[in-house]
Length: 368
Ligand code: MRU
Image 1 (spheres, rainbow, N blue to C red):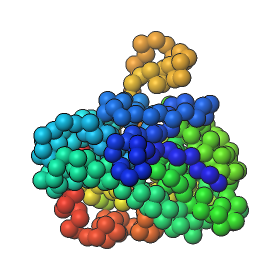
Image 2 (image 1 turned 90 degrees about the vertical axis):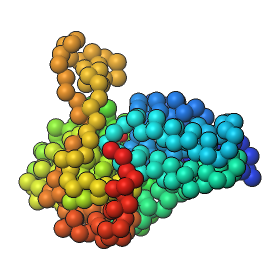
Image 3 (image 1 turned 30 degrees about the horizontal axis):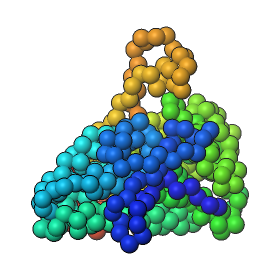
Image 4 (image 1 turned 45 degrees about the vertical axis):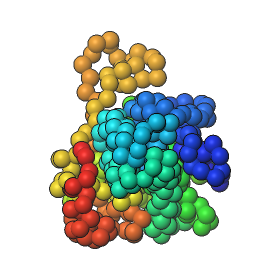
């Protein structure tokens, strides 16, 4: 398979990362058009994240990091300290784009750390270091997704069928994805895996994005409406569920696209394993449980006028949480780049990120 390049940094000259720009797939136009959005503008990066032109927790983090790098590259700051302040301001602004995916804050913190630690450098050097850090975040994401794919593929047997929700594929990351990575790796291992895809109301990330990328890769794909999952599980068509995550609290409670919790309840009721797949950049061990995860609410239009057609009375009252929290007790295992983490997650998550030290560092630096 030749994967689409969801997001990347394009340097103007091969010998230096700056000046450069961000190139990303405009995911609002899929599956009908594959169009790339190219930008050097901070405001356009903010809008791209807000409007889901780039979406999926890891991809949001990468876009934000690259956004900071573009924001400062034309700066005339007199010294590194002044440039570091500008980078911090760009990070603060991008942090207001979406609240739930912790990868956004994690990536922005990495950029802030470079700006702070290297503020003694001259501005041109600091610009290069910031762009390099954004590219490193992108590279690390590819490696983490690949590792998740390897660990997850070990759970997949030839001929099995996976149910997934939303899009946690290559389009949601730098490459491979999280929930879909094991399917791509299994394909390389010549296992035949089928995938049922929830369409994922209201923005149809399953129908528009997951079905598209799986079919591009030649995976047998069956699209279902969200409300068909119970029947499909009851009919015995599914061997296991694999979903991504936007934020995983210290006890394993997991925020992911709205509807994920319902799928977890259904999987539990039918005795089907339910796996969450996410890089450790999605862990937020500063939060004791999922109740503390901020849940984004989105506008009424996405439900009443989805994709331009009025499908509900004008002015009807709408409630639209974009994410829900699946309680840890419904999760069979969490698969990250370090391996397959089993319950009790309060212990295994901490072990995976290197114990209490990292958790404490996170608490000091992460925003919510
Ligand atoms: O609103 P979205 O499309 O950004 O939501 C995306 C999801 O919920 C994904 O499942 C999650 O970010 C994991 S992506 C590897």
